[in-house]
Image (cartoon, rainbow, N blue to C red; front, side):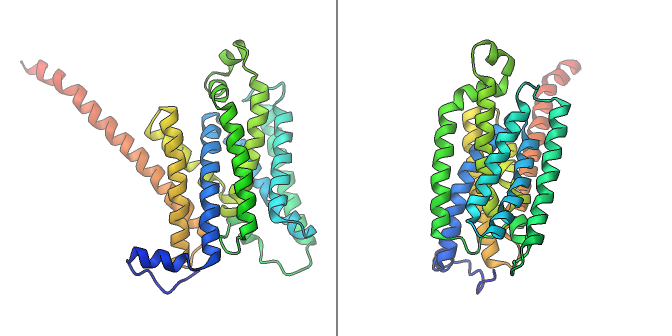
Amino acid sequence: MTSTGFSWNLLADVQQMWSYPFMVNAFRAGAVVAVVAGAVGWFMVLRRQTFAGHTLSVVAFPGASFAVLTGISLSLGYFGFCVAAALVLAGLRRGRAADDGAESAATGVLQAFVLACGYLFMALYKGLLEGPQALLFGSFLGITTGQVLTLAVAGVVVLLVLAGIGRPLLFASVDPAVAAARGVPVRLLSAVFLVLLGAAVAEAAQITGALLVFALMVLPAATAQVLTARPAVSLLLTVGIGFAVTWAGLVAAFYWPYPFGFFVTSIAFGLFLLAHGARALAGVRAGRAGRGPIALGGTA
């Protein structure tokens, strides 16, 4: 969407954006999605389950297209397909090692099948469809108050469950063998987390689109884990980055005629590169500081 122009008067610009009900809903939905995606995405990156997350993001596309075909709520299509696929992935993981090649192959087969189903549902739809762009790459236009409420309720449920299993899940993520030896239900936690991941992907896909879910699910978490190894700080930083990136993307998409998903992904990727640059610079400085006394000792 293109507005009348950016005035550099922040108060006036905010008042202008929030004078439109759809923008208010977009900011509300974006805040909910950023928090949920950040919290769940942090564990996903820590557990090295980005391939599973990517598969669930692909599932969001047939979920949305099926909802359009059958006339049901888009949110129901997103959540129904993503949670169902998460249960399938949990079944595939049962009795297998996390890095088992057969599991990866089965996950890839599931991904290809559901993607084909999505295109089939779109082909069967005979009405006027805005095209796959909004489903694949996201759109902040047309978000209703009902959708915001649905996202908020689902987000609260996801966060409450995640908070309840957070400590044992962290233990099982860092060292699953030791956690299992100490009686932690590693497999059950893995299955529950996959369901939470499916719900988080379903939420994020409604804002970023199916193909750009990783903009909120991976990049903020990956950036935070580059900057700090402290779990609590890293998790809070992930949520903060996701929130900032989402709202910055909404502002940019309001003032410039380019896709919202492009802004979110570009800003998040830029922060990721800056984090790596800052870490590399800190390493160089630490190396120089460490070599300093040795050089002085050699010239004495």
